[in-house]
Length: 459
Image (cartoon, rainbow, N blue to C red; front, top):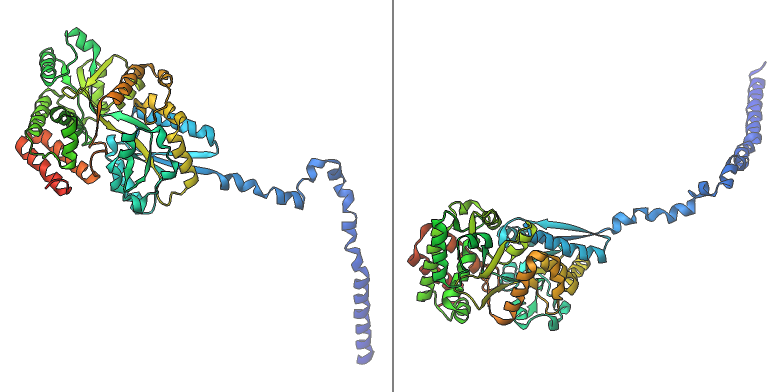
């Protein structure tokens, strides 16, 4: 066979094969054409037909719950007994209204916020604010540079339901920066009823009566006054009540405004009052927090404790009811007051949720849930006294506290943020804590006058 014939034959075979392939090509769709037979069972089972293209698109938001889940971070220092229980009660009110919101309870232990304030300041300055945080009503807010780091909440206030004195305390640079949840009393003497009865003691109301009772108790082998100074604020807390006792209401206010000098002899008297009291205190006070020291009273090893009325909530959380109360000796008729409140930071990650939280904090429902357990009275004036019966251990005390709030001379606590700017309050606490160990009355009094000058309040 010639080459030309061989080539022609080869090309013919290739062409024929190509035509055969083209002719066979339509057979490929034949399989899909028969598919309905395979899908027939799906047609008979509607549930199996769901994963079609269109339903898949409508099911796409299955991820939505995770994306839409809201959070609310509340920053506070409430970790002890009734404080924590009261906060949880307010959380429950919030959750009933906004069940889709996850509450993050960011607490930093340490009474009076000693540790929490430093952590919070760092977070605010670092651009990592919580959604809302606890702050004492009053000049403490100055520490957080409100015009830089906080949002005013004037629009959330109903002035008609808050006492005028409290509104004055809350206002700073023409705005309200936090929502009050309660009123506390700083100058309270708590006593163990059983110990007092067994030793034939009456409740001391004067300084002389107080020390006479201390002598009787010490002779009986009982700790007259239990105290914890571990956190660095407790000594100053006790001292401010003694300062109110020796100065009286008007001049106590005046010592924080510069109208009364710290060189006043009544300040000397208060320092001597405190110094003498320390000779009747448990020896391990430096190792104990206030509630740790309170255990001595619960176990009948100690007779008295000077602490704010959050102690009532703590007693209740311990199931303890064998206690009585009076004003810190010498300070009868004076209510050294403070208020816990919650603020709204600039850049709060969940601002809408935070505003809802502040609404709960300021509401009648929220305060009636919170205060009986916390051991405080409502900041609002329209709370129902019957609401406080839910905690029998604190009901009688809180009823009397509400009466005193209405009739006593109200003065601001410095240790709890109401009377002075935070830097002055911090230095004041440090000075009195140092006095516990030094016992130097003259040196401490001079230092206190110097602090007032440094705060640019005294000349």
